[in-house]
Image (cartoon, rainbow, N blue to C red):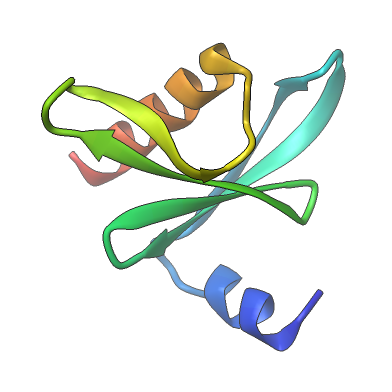
Length: 83
């Protein structure tokens, strides 16, 4: 893991949780950046997600994460953490 990723993960606002992705148990880590949330799956960068004010839902701003249920779960966990 790079020093930059390690530094990002030490931020107290960042969090991880286990879930099922592509039929296997993985750890999803969410880290806070300016204007978006980065998503790591088992320490690999996958995507950046944002909350769409126009649509009032979470969407992929960059990267590939085609599992809409997982995007929703990540968004709900972010909302629960910060509300």
